Length: 495
Image (cartoon, rainbow, N blue to C red; front, side, top):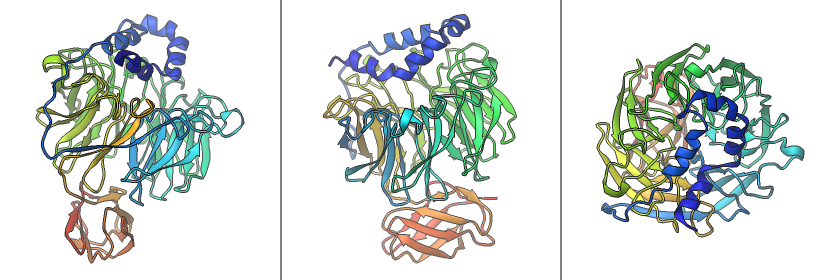
């Protein structure tokens, strides 16, 4: 199949067609950049053919772990999460037994198990087309389904590691519809998320929900604040949540905003095209305290940007994609960045690169970008989702298309980074039970929180449960194993 047809199939999803048609009247009034013309710009953008030139970097190993074949799911667009058992969990947008998408588990070696097939209930009451998962402190996975449910506007669900799914909430448009960005479990134990449409003004909502499924709308978005909240939120060290909106704002090019746990929303930045527009992906807070994100379009070459923004709203464009000859660094970013243990940021582009099927890249905090891998179609194409760095040090991700069957892949990429540990949650009070994820943890003899020893129990080779000790302060968590001392990828924040 020609590259441009593959890209169009990837970009124009059924729900987006439905959304654009149902909202066409409003979009046409909103102007060129935020209305229906945006879809045509997207179509034109992905028709660009890029040169076949790329320089391979030493010490990197790319592997295709699995190619989807519809029966076990198709179109994995939201990425992966590493579970407490050391395996990876993800979702597919379509395919599976009922063609409603799936939840799957895959080992680091590539053995995939389908855990749940959506649309298993009459009328798809359990939802379909699920988003990215989050593993909560109770060990279960939580997520949203973009469509289906009791009112056909999407759902929030809980799923055990064994695959038993419970629908916690069905959206009814008044409290939002089409939740695509997934959930974040905050320091208060509740889940926070966004919806694409619905709410009091039909421009989307920000909501919070208890683990039992009680949902409250925190804020109904106004067009001036930004609309199409597709990317989800991140809770920052100040306790507030930060996010992006695809359209709306002063120039209808999208926004960056923050919102308190009580629902007070503050606009931080309106994009104007030169600094990018259509910030599909959400933000991450880096170790320097600033937030990093990407835009799908705009910038110097109209192919997307990487930017940094302070908590006060001071935004700097770090990099304009497609600045190399032939677009070898890729075009268009649709996924959240990840900061790795080396301090650099890693991400994906959905198109461009040496073969026109997208790339994996690394960018420094100062804006120096390096293309690490260009997809060639056979190993995957169009990485819609971002990367995760697993505790073995390697990166894992998914592609929406390509692979042996054309329905997407799961892949790994090693760039030589070493193993580490990470905590669940990432902050807490003295006495909090903290789950520590890692590899080869059996026989560990010491766990410390910024130097203060903690009591702990080794649950398995990939999990330790520790109690946050009295006197602990904010800092790194260290685990002494029989072979080495592992350090956490981020500071554990003592509240």
